[in-house]
Image 1 (tube, one colour):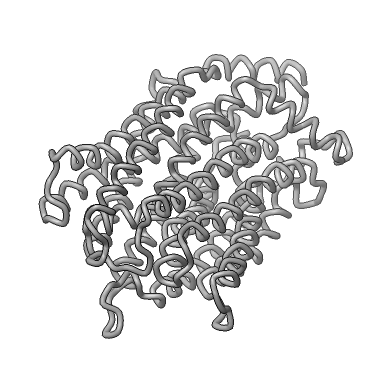
Image 2: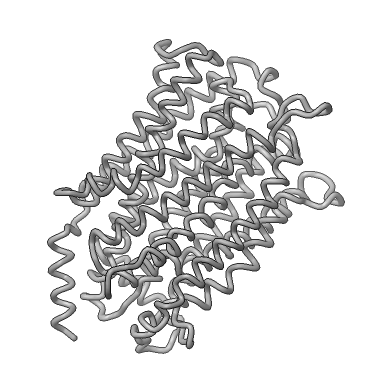
Length: 470
């Protein structure tokens, strides 16, 4: 395959906008349904977790079906097109529960339904999208460059939406003193997010249509069936490198799921920042992602992807959890102070660089599994590989979200309460339980990364052996 054009890179990167808007919603759905709509946080976490589990279960099926799709549009594009309506519609209705819902039980069912449909749409788009990373470029370093721009767009939209949330949407009104409790703000974000999802899906799908002839070259040799489904899944799971990548993603996303669901709690209740301060502190988290491509390119010189991913995860622990540990030890600025605000402003900038560094390296590691498994099985199973990896990570994300709601219930954190109404002992308990749990997850991921075995030289040798077979 010839070198990718700028338009191809831009089209692939647009998929990150879809993922960014979707992931931004994860930061706010728990607090919207529990604090604003009044659903018990444990039930909210359980509802979101159920949607994530369904999403994870559907991943391998969609990956397998997309690998084995036969159409004049190739293997991936039918799924990309088919994802747009269910994803955008369910995302919109997530933020607009109808007024006729009465009581927690009906609100719980609505949240579960919206989550299930939304995450099915996400799976239908993201699994084929990630599978195409391995298909449109076999090059070890090009894959890292390509996914780095995807990650840039993901973080720009994920954090950019948060800026708009705190600066323009979650603002106080004459009736609502605390902007976090403003339901219209969440609904405005739902409208904008829906528009971004539709536009980005169309750009990705149309922009990469020229690769359809290339994608059709990977012939489907066997008819899809239940036996083939399990066989192809098991073939992936038998690979040691794949299991290491699965496990790393699972540990990372268990922490991310908890962090995402509790981010607003930590920055609003624990650190004592108001909506305007939150809008400002998300700015460095948005802009720092732009540094990923040059930093990743520099770190990849003479290093393997698992090493770069480990650097990212170690840095994330230090930058994200270090301040909490220091505060609990009395070694950090006073809660709610301007000194604390600017300290966290700086930490947020560096923290995001480390997070995107890990995710870009890890996603590129997934793509490199393709040729190794093809060498063993004779099949191109990009979709099965991508979906099997994300299966593990999404189950972990579901676990993390469930843990977040459970932790809040365990310490009996108040619901429908503004920052000033929460007792200080509950805020301290939140920090005491949050930081150790996050540390355990991410340290586990670092230990697994040390065992990854697909190096640059091994990848070149695999490509050479595959070429000799043809």
